[in-house]
Length: 274
Ligand code: DGL
Image (cartoon, rainbow, N blue to C red; front, side):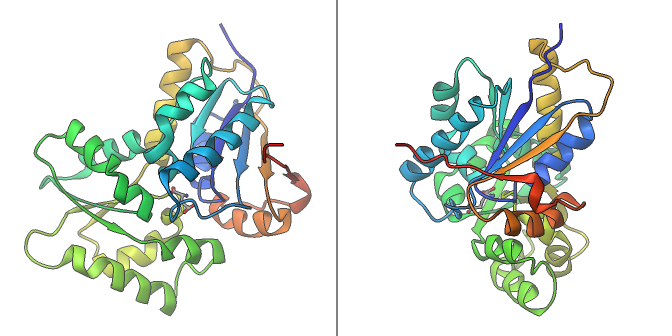
């Protein structure tokens, strides 16, 4: 069995492109449609109700592109809205990034002490705590919200004085003392582009993990289980949709994608109801 329909990938902005990149590498023959709700970013400072409403509208828009599966490449939306999104999109399967991120953390740790950095909404909801404890009962999880990292990443300020000062301010409390975590989960899809700066601040001994590779693995398995994998020989296409400035999406999105995105290849879409 094979299914040539595209996989929908959704994030509040361009951060989810870190997951898209992993999907592109792992599943070269799949067509991918990426939607960034850039008009309403950030999600991480908003209530669970608002995030759920926005994410439902955005992912339903992807159904209009005849997607066979939806990947919620946003930790905030995965943390607070995965179950409502699964219901809203049924029977289309929906995969979030929290469980894959938690698994990456539990696989990497030697001491069982895991730090998680994420947006305020993700930290507040406690989804990472629960997912890590489920995968590794007894794990010691410490969390810190790092909302400014989202702005720095969207601004393209991923290294230098400002990024380092923010990283020190956020991360120093998490890493002081003898019981500091040996692993840090980058629990926001915007954070991997800041990895070098974060590593400089926390030290080389701390393993940095994110959910991109483990999510790509989860998607590959889910496609195989359901007989949904594409069988085409040619490379799959990647299509970009954004709810605000296509020029900005292309410019900053290219940093996340690791290759040029042309503004004319980004489609402006209106996903608001009514
Ligand atoms: N990329 C989103 C996440 O993974 C956060 C960005 C935002 O606050 O919208 O949590």
